[in-house]
Amino acid sequence: KSTIPLTGIRKAIAEHMHRSLSVSAQLTLMGELDVTELVKFRKKLVAQEEALGARITYTDLVVAAVAKLLKEHPQVNASLIDNEIKLWEDINVAVAVALEEGLIVPVVRNADQKSLVEISKEVRTLAKKARERGLASEEVQGGTFTITNLGALGGGYRFETVIINQPESAILGTGGITDRAVVRDGKIVIRPIMTYYFTYDHRVFTGAVAVAFMNSLAQLLEAPGSLSEGTSLT
Image 1 (tube, rainbow, N blue to C red):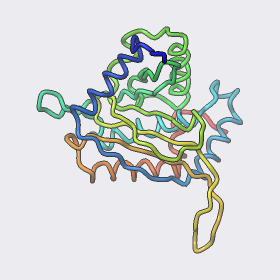
Image 2: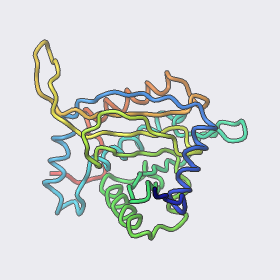
Image 3: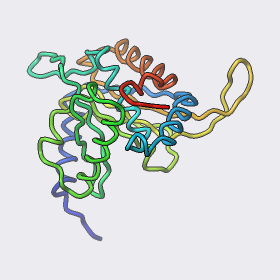
Image 4: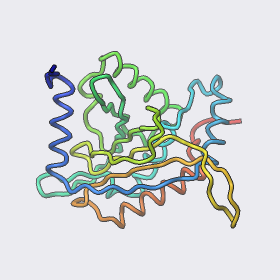
């Protein structure tokens, strides 16, 4: 028999996750997105990697989409603090990075004010610093919404619940993209499908708000052209 002491980052994560479930009323929406156009869009961006100065990932695209939509759905960019729901003016998107001892969530500040390329470069820089244990305290504080890409970890898992990063009120998890048979116009076709899981605090906003936000996100990711605003494409 052996034991592993719960210390350091792992202990802090355990305490934070337990507290999150204890202090909030968490529900999870799960679904699937047809990302045919998103896959095409990313291929176009990757083909221009040298000109753009960045290799755009699916995580970058989701961060850009979420940042854009949080302006339109301010209730999702909120926290319940001291019996008051605070709607944050800043849109600071935290992006989970997997380490051996657990996850850490560096923050892309004012993500709505940055181009897709700027977001991509910042996500890559923050992830590198996280893996090298070089993040400053201010780089992991002040998030208003968190994204975790479980698809990047592999394994083929389609759905799971994700726990809110307090004091935020929502977190979005995305799964891997897999080719699946779907029905379109009465015919069976193969399409790239991405799963998602959106956990939100029912104390802060209702299921109707959650569904409206995810419907908007689905529409944007299924027709992602506007995500390249501020980025020169040919």
